[in-house]
Length: 173
View 1 (cartoon, rainbow, N blue to C red):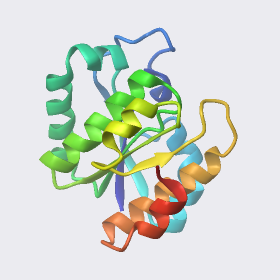
View 2: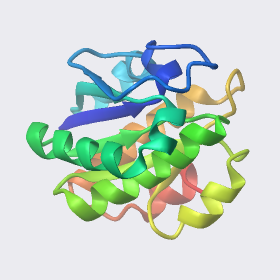
View 3: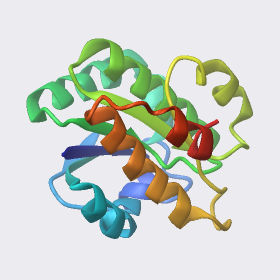
View 4: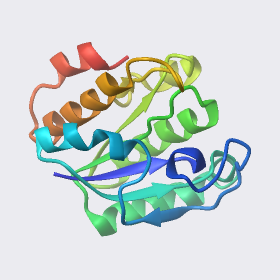
């Protein structure tokens, strides 16, 4: 199972909290939270093949172009699943993650979902009936390992076209 991660500037290591204008980029290496996901990925036969990233401010000012390019990158790499997040409690990243997951589901053959904390309540309310959203703790909170495990289990269930309701009820909003 091939997975692409989509991050903001912080999770990708391309910038800090205030570097909102980092342009779209890509790495063919495992970055950020995907490193911590590796034990759970092994359990489900998953491998992160690329990490795509963009500053949330750059995304906000260039939504259509960035979304189009992210979908094109997904079409080129052909992953089975795209995980947008974890966005934790970062509001701009949460909005980007949900919008991009929705666009990928509607414009590519890949399956996509987002991951964020409950502090992104407006985004969750807007998207919870359109995409799957894994619940994560806020940055620095407890429960991250469980959320990462849930992201991997949801990925596998989606790829295998299995009933995701049990996983969703445990891990999703």
